[in-house]
Length: 237
Ligand code: ADP
Ligand code: TYD
Image 1: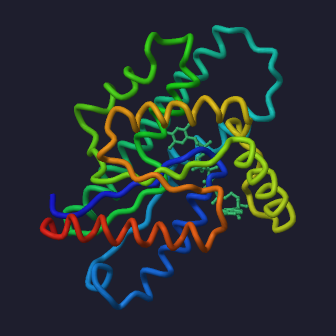
Image 2 (image 1 turned 90 degrees about the horizontal axis):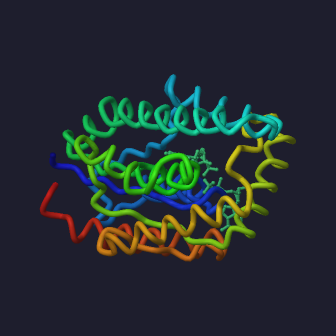
Image 3 (image 1 turned 45 degrees about the horizontal axis):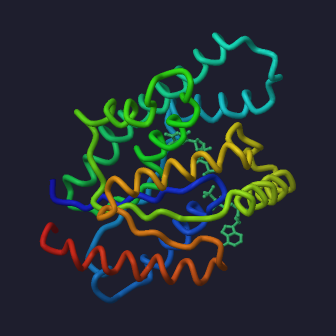
């Protein structure tokens, strides 16, 4: 496969989607190497396809649900969620990521398999032994490992505040983004720790960006990191 796969990861509210949108605009205007002459595809998980829509609906529903379910039902819920994310990933790979890589494109995905390892590694704790290893193993035979992953690091308390202001912005603009199941500080703290564990296992794949700063600074650093990654992987295109 000739293209390059770059993924953005981080907890909810770390600013990935904001940077991905601004990056797409900046890259479209860039006339210098290593950006000029390359074709980029910006994509995301969960996707906008059938599986992705089911997941978003489910996460909203669960954020509104009372805590009163029994533990068996809760375990089933977490497993169902994992397999929905996996189904979404399978379709995303087959219909979007692989065809673009085969055409030699630079694919930038806002979330990818590490989100499953970090998030479902947390939701499945107590349901499955060693959930992070298990989820990673589920991907291994068929998933494409990213060439590089940019991890947007932020303290969960600030991330939750950003999620709350995003909800307020969306409520006033009538956009469908509501509060989601995972936007709680304690949970996101565990997910952030899981991301750190993933980085420890494969440090060479990751570039960490301090996402607590202002958007402009983060965007500049992401552009610089991306330029370096593209220069390093030049020979593949
Ligand atoms: P993510 O996709 O990682 O969940 P978003 O990009 O949706 O995060 O950002 C969450 C909220 O925080 C949005 O309201 C966004 O406008 C805001 N935001 C994003 N980046 C920053 C930043 N660097 N500083 C302050 N607010 C930010
Ligand atoms: P997303 O829309 O990317 O949320 P945000 O923009 O707030 O970062 O993803 C929706 C939620 O799904 C988010 O809480 C992260 C979670 N998620 C998983 O739990 N597992 C996964 O594999 C993926 C891709 C996302």
